[in-house]
Length: 534
Ligand code: GLN
Image (cartoon, rainbow, N blue to C red; front, side, top):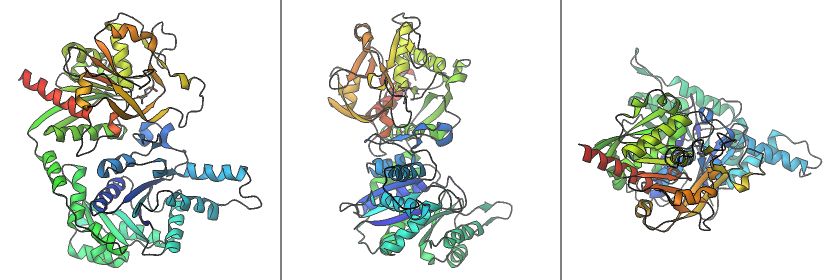
């Protein structure tokens, strides 16, 4: 039977609940347990796919084609666990299921209410990640204790624990201890109050994880234990890490966080081996090389919008023993200030939607192409590489994507065939994992070291096959297609150290110990170029 860990948050949002949950999952997995993860989001969008990156940060896409919260990216990157559509539920998705069932007559005769109908639906969601092959499910409850909108999730978790018993479900509460510099003191009162809020709704946290800037003294630990009603050994310190989020599991392991959780759940605790992880973190802290990458995007005011990309760059840095400085360059500003790219060693054009910033991206691509600066274009990035080449090399002057200019005489990027009859926006793009076949004589093939790959997609537009011939006879070669050869998935420029575009999002599959080949290759090419210019 699967046991459950519910993780709640207190005092403020953005405490890093996702990273804490992912770190715990990693430690438990390494102790031999089979772990599943789930994130609950209180908002009413059915999924985050329709939200602006400014509202929500990146939309993470799972292999099965679900648009999900970016915390699932942490789950996958820390643990190697593959999330599914069951790994993320929003209030919108829960309510939609209940309302649809009501319309079908599924509750005939009953008044449909938050309790029991919504809470029952939530409890079913908890169970959707359980199974005979899962020992522990970690359920991260989004929002902060005291929010009105997360109440149904918390009530469902309370009922669930009541039903399965305390040996089968525990509550871990992540809270903040603010440090008042002027007083030189760590404050425990907000944490006491947030635990008080949970107690009011019948939830008694078993473990308290305290985010703090400075270390917690023994007397502060005792105070937290006494007033938050947990044994002192179950007060865990989670101090700010100085270099990398990948240090968090090491810090938590030092305090036996994972072991204590297993004891509470009466589960056997295998040996924990973290030496390889420690080595990776050491590379982050003191690498041999360094280089700078410009990510030319349009949501640079919101770094969370490029979360998986930035993490993948860091993984590639580790693989190349390199500290990579990531500069988020606003494409619109670049149009007027091209010098923003003067000191970068490589460029990445990320995915995106709409016309804002396109001229800046095209300018960056032209420069990378002409000056042989390594460049990786992802999704919209590939589409812009195709547009730039069509305009400036093939001399199709108004070449464009019909997303930006529906009236262009050279629609080198057009709406995918399957998309033409779709008008609804939620969950209707080409989503999830699709196979791609690589051309043998390409840098791309060398990087992957295989003919067939599986990568995750999220787009409506694609390379227009009417232009296949024009590109086949040019230097911008098509080096990856769907196995039936109908869709162009990758392009690569000849006689250039690294000028590669992919229609998919490689950033969703990179791992700390297994950097994605395209990111790894990009950073390697940047270092090589840097050396040759030195
Ligand atoms: N807007 C483009 C499309 O829908 C690119 C999407 C993306 O970059 N994720 O095809």
